Length: 329
Image 1 (cartoon, helix red, strand yellow):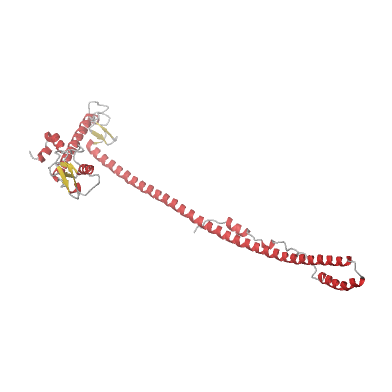
Image 2 (cartoon, rainbow, N blue to C red):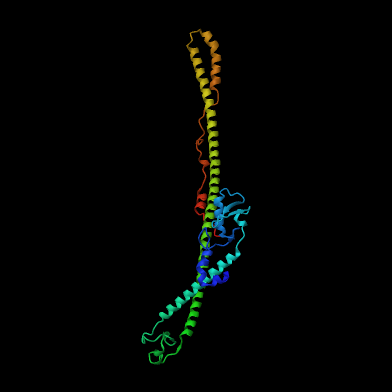
């Protein structure tokens, strides 16, 4: 018996399954299957695991022993990928699996057929009769006795198989229609999900743009605030400096006047002859007139302390800011 006949023979199946088992994983060979120089076969994945367990440092090339006969296998730089594939064993595995699948399908179909025969429904009016026709008028399956003697004797009937095929085809169309409707619904849901994602993305982008626009507005306001505060400070400094300058002149004049008063008082209190007093009096009097003859003192100009002219009207800006809305273009 050749190997193909062995695959098709039910008596050799158990033995063949053992022959097609990998000695490492103990399961049926997983393609690709490699053949060793000793003519034993391994799954290439199992052979690679075995080789790597002996070659922890992953050197190029190496050796390992056949798990069946302990023959030493020498590998080139390609490792287990340099071993020849056993296409014959792979084809036998495919044939074996196909036969097993066909056998299982036949057994399943036979089981279904037996179940259908055993569960074939009976007529409710005539319990011994099988339902074998279809009443077109009443739209219900029934038996031949009902057509001849029973409630459906005046009704139009049709072969059960014909109506079965027709309604099954209609149901298939309904399934296809539902499938098409489901596909359309899925497409709509996908579009909704995409739209939601875009809305979220656009929302994030618009929030970022709004923040940037308002930050720029804040920056402009801060810059203008600094400029106006600097103008107020400059006006303040100029007015204070001017008044301080006038006050300094007045203080200087006050010191001169006080010194002149002391000098005149001391002259008057000095015990001297009238001739000596008169000799100095003219000079002292002239000095006093010179000190007292300066510009008359004056206080600050009216309103010099007021800075009301440095007030800005922000009502229009407040109105514009309060009315600020998104552009609808």
